[in-house]
Length: 592
Image (cartoon, rainbow, N blue to C red; front, side, top):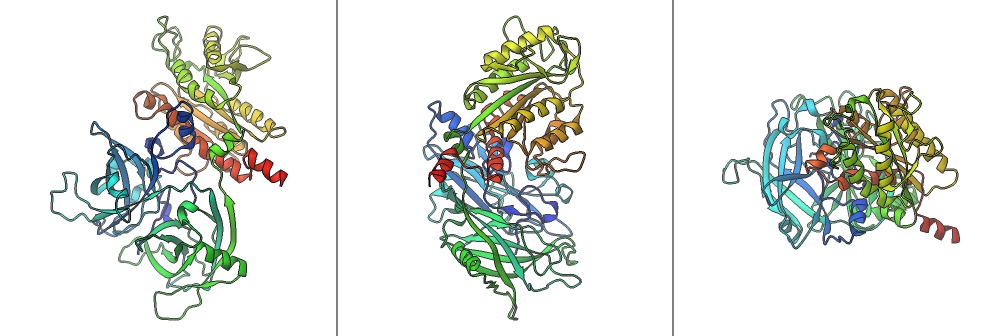
C-alpha cells in the first residue's frame, strides 16, 4: 500500500501532509489562477465583477504506473493544467511526490473554479521525480528535468457530472491516446468546496504498537482517509513520522469540515511503519501497514471524552494490543480573511523605493529611474501605478508611509531609510498620486548611491507595526518594497525578517528590471523552510511575498493575483496563532 510523503517537498517522506488549509491551496501558487483567493475575489466583486462559479477540489489517484527506476519503484507526482482557447497550457496545481509507488493516492488537492457555462479542458500529466530532486519543493521542480510517466485529458464537466463524481482516464504518451502501450490509469474525483468554518483540532498517540522492524523499533505515522459515497476512500492527512518508537505522540492536526464532511462520516485511520533502511528489494524506502481502524470524528470525540483507547484491527491473524488514543479534541471556528476585513480589520500599507546606483543614471534612457518627457512610465512608476490600485483598496485612509533607501539625501549622506517626500517631520503621502509626486521629486533631490540594504526599512516598518499593538489589534501592516533586486545585506535582512515575523506585518517585494532575483526568492521562503537569523532563531511564520514585475508584464500572472496570493494566508496565520477573532465575534462574546 502506498501513501503520500510530503506536501511541500519530499525530504525523506517524514513530514506531515494535509489538514485544514489557508487559502490559496494550490501547490503551484505562482501559476494558479483557478483556485479561490478571498482577497482577489473581494477586490473584483467590489468593482461589480461577480464570477459565476462553483469552487471545486480535485483528488487524484493512479494505478499501474510505469516503473522507470532501476533499484526501486517510480516516485510519482501529478500536475494539472488548464487548456486555454489558443491551445496553450496553464498550470493550475501539483500534488506532492509519493515515494516508490505505482498505485499512488495523492493527498494534495487541485483547486479549480467550475464554470458551467463554458467548456474547461484539462490536461493531467504524471512524472517520476528523480531522487536528486527530493529535497526541492514540488512547486519549484522543473518538469523538463523529471521522467514523463503519462498524460490524460478530459473536460471538467465530465468529472462533475459523473454520478460518483469520479472519472477514470487511461494514461498515454505525449503523442496521443491512439498508441496502444499501457501507461496505467488516472482517477480524478471532484468535490464542491464546503463553505463551513467548522474545524477540529485533534492530537493522537498510540501505545504498544506492533514492532515490524528487525533491527530497531518501528517508525510509525498515521494516514487518515475519508470514505466517500462510492465506498472508496480519499486520503486527507498524513502525520509526521516518529522514529524508533512504539508509543508515539504526534503533533496536533487540524481537519476542516471540507475534509471530514460531518461528525458521522466514517474515517479510516491507518498506522504505518516507515522504514528508511530499505528491504534489499527496493533498496530505498519501504512502507508496511502496522494496523488500521475505522472511526468517525464523532467517535474520536467520544474516545477523548471517555479517555479510552480504540484497538486497531491488525492485518495478520495474530492478536495485538495496538491502541489509538485521542489526547486532544477541540472544535473551533476558522474565520476567513473576509470575516476579518468585513468586521473592521484594516490593512495599512507602507512603501519603500530603491534609490541605489545599480538602477542606472536617471538621466540615461536605459535607467530604471529614467523619467520620460513623453510621459511614458518607467519601471518604478509602472509598479507604483499598477500596484497602487490594489493596495489603495484595502487601506481605508489611503495615507501611505513612503520611504526611499540607498540614496544620497538632501544633506549629502547616504541613507537606507529616508522620507520619500523630503520632509523631516512626516513620512506619509496621500494616495498613489502622492507616492508618484514624492518619487519624482526625490529623483531631482536624491543621488543614487548604495549599497542595497533592506534592514533599516524593514525595522522601521516593524517598529510601526509593533507600536500599534498597544492601542489597536485590528490593524495589519503590509510593507511594499520596490527594488531592482541586487541585495547587499542578505543576513541582516533575514535577521530583521525573523524579528518581524512575530508582528502584524507582511512584506511584498516587487522586483523591477531584468536582474537576478535569486536572493528575493530566498527571502520569500517558498521552499518550505522558514528563515533563520544569525543567532539560529527561526521565523515564526513566512511574511514575505516576492513578485517579479517582468512576469506581470509578460502576462504570466496578474498584478492582483500576484500581490494578494499569499497575503490572506499570512494574515490568517498571524490572527489564528494569537486567537484574534473578527471584531463582530469579539463584541458578541463580550456581550454574552
